[in-house]
Image (cartoon, rainbow, N blue to C red; front, top):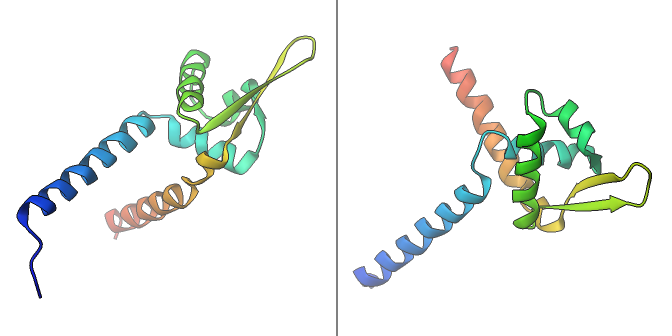
Length: 118
């Protein structure tokens, strides 16, 4: 079996590390996974619904996190023509690609907690 040149291996490692950095930057913070999980389970939700569901988040922080996720194409924001104006948030098709990752992280977290209390 022929060995891969060290240069190619190093380049692949750097590309992988850069990809992980990008993902962590987009998904970092205390609230993003909670918001994404809530939208995955709840479908379209209004701002105040999200405030109620994401326990402990301040409205200013929720607003910031929603803007970040919208900018990164993970959620969509729809302004409805009502009085007063209603805004709905929904996970995008691209955002839905995170569902298996979030599920695996949840499984890992459950197993980790179990290991602590054995």
